[in-house]
Image (cartoon, rainbow, N blue to C red):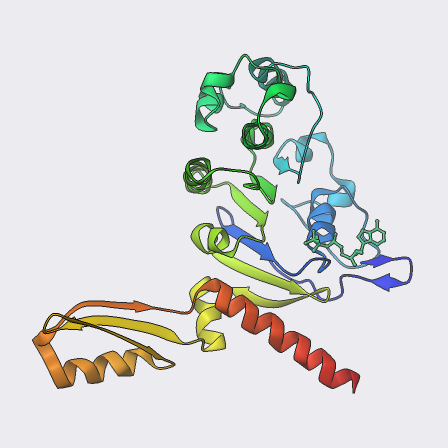
Length: 280
Ligand SMILES: Nc1ncnc2c1ncn2[C@@H]1O[C@H](COP(=O)(O)OP(=O)(O)OP(=O)(O)O)[C@@H](O)[C@H]1O
């Protein structure tokens, strides 16, 4: 994808499977929003091939669009509408194409039951975000795009939102989300895509990527009432040797692979170092 003379996307190649939750991660300016806007049909690409739900997004018609759900970074419009009225109105758009959510069920699912008669402009930031999510899923989309979905959510709202995404994915909705919250990506995503310098530099589950980057694992255990912690690149061998030596004396064993944040930082740093070497 080129803006003027600037190639911002040049190696973006991936396929999402039905019902999969994908997290698109990457530094500021990496091209995440541009990628998502091309997939949504909001931005025309300058080159390359794209197919979303069997159609080229540049040619998608109303019936195709009704199968997508979109939650943009921040919406502030419709301030004068009441929550329930607004969602009932949006749901009426979809009826021609598919069976939308029941409005009250949707309001309950996003945790807005107590605010259903409030005007959108009177909601707090987090409540407004819940409404954005409700608007995005009202038509029971086959494919849902979520751009920084939980920005402004309190921990409880975040947890409820995560449950909702799992529920949607169980019902076979495919979800593509962007987030800078790596803990959220690790909890939600079946697959992580990392975009840097306009290309996908990593594609796999959080565990796959962690193994690929061989980040250190942390092994914790107790023996004779004492707590031990050891970091190692070879956790399986370490645990094997530990049991050979101490057997049943080992209790409370925990092995924690490197977090997605560790892996992400290692991958992005490796990518930046290669860029520097090539520039020399
Ligand atoms: N309309 C535009 N015209 C020209 N350049 C643009 C335009 N929109 C984005 N860009 C450039 O394209 C690159 C990718 O931007 P994009 O918004 O897709 O990144 P992003 O990964 O979503 O970033 P962030 O994490 O900061 O939201 C950036 O270098 C940006 O400056």
